[in-house]
Image (tube, rainbow, N blue to C red):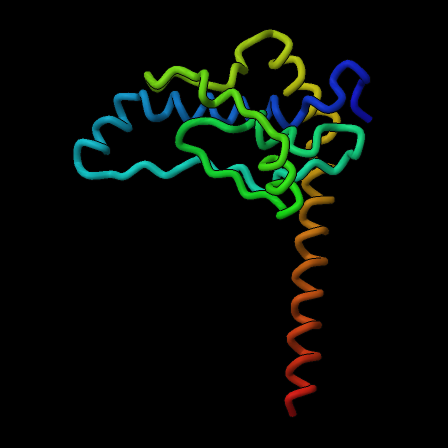
Amino acid sequence: MVPDDLKDTCGLAVGGACYKAYVEWHESDRWKALEAKGALRQRLLFASTGTKDPGLSDYLYVSGLAAPDTVNTMPDKTLKAFLEHGTSQLARWPRDGAPSLDCDSGEDRRLRASIFTRLGEELQVEGASKFDDSWQALLADIESKTAAMS
């Protein structure tokens, strides 16, 4: 459903937009006032960043979303791939707190608009369904193991 010129870039563009908002929040006067009163930073979480398309790099989102003050959870397979042959731009990024993921270009704005108008609702429904499927499988496993212990 994504136009060919936008394929395989959606996750990185949305991640970049999230990181930009995260950095801007921590540069705001409102945050600085909270921090002065003892508020602690929370890290931005990029969750389940495995690559599903076998035609793409097996660590695409690990290297593309690596940024200061972030946490990235990923499947073991993705972590192993990154450790074996991955690279990250993180070492080249400035340490002055500037946003590391560039998401200000017109292309990125166009990409995000396309994502949200074409796929947003469908992805939410699909994502919720996958989490529900996992939850139901967990409950069934617990029930099965409980029955076996009886």
